[in-house]
Length: 398
Image (cartoon, rainbow, N blue to C red):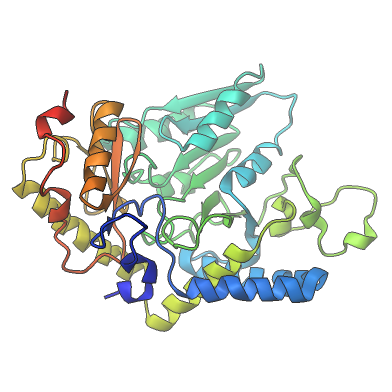
């Protein structure tokens, strides 16, 4: 029903079978066709307007993007949505707002995305920074364990993913935990793997937490445009700050560092805005066609149900219920399935086998991920994933 908007889905890469099934859509969604015209429009605007492009970008395009994001997440103030090329830049800018010579206690989980995990490991080399990581397993008790530690310790910063990047499991009760957090704790919700996949209502925590996400995954606008919502009462002064933070009057610098009471408090510096144009084109397309996040989620849930039914009828050594990482597949899961293949060698072999029969997927070490998107046929059974193995099933487990 929706794949008519995705020309790329019907055009397999060179050397690939025309019947390719793209299930790497956890990592990279195909871009809707409208993004081509959007990129060309960006080129026209940037090339013809030159330095004058900043006016339309800051006065029209960015506010339009902020408004679209605010509507999607039910945020009350679109002007509190900061933008940057990636979420790491935004999160590190937030980290830079804490005094560098004073103790900093951070609470998080052991399941956060690579950028944040690596950054914390580096920061832990400093004597004043202490990190507590709550194990995400078992998921059934994660909320209780995390919340208890949050209220027991004296944490200046807490950070957790709404949907875990490695498994697709939703952090149970996370938004409620944020709503009841200690007043002195700054809280960051990493929403990247839930944004535009699941309905997210931030109205209850808009002034209690920072929320990060971007356009690369489920919106399908490509890399290069991320955002962070900021509580309206935020008075933090990031040490990492760029010229965009004083874009209102760059020719009249005051000689001291001041901060605006909106998203510019966390603004950085020059970036490429082609992704901004693409994102706006997709928001406009979905609005015209009546495609909502709820409809997308229902469509994917149906696709996942068909996949599970097909999987249950087959006897695959790795793609089975026992190896599927999950908590609550109906209400507590994102838009991809992750299978624990036991070893990196197993996941690599399986990925090659699937590619040999025109199924594209991605993996992280021993974990193999299969994603679902609205450009999958609404009658797709996913039997192609299980048929005609090119590698002997027993060899997968060797």
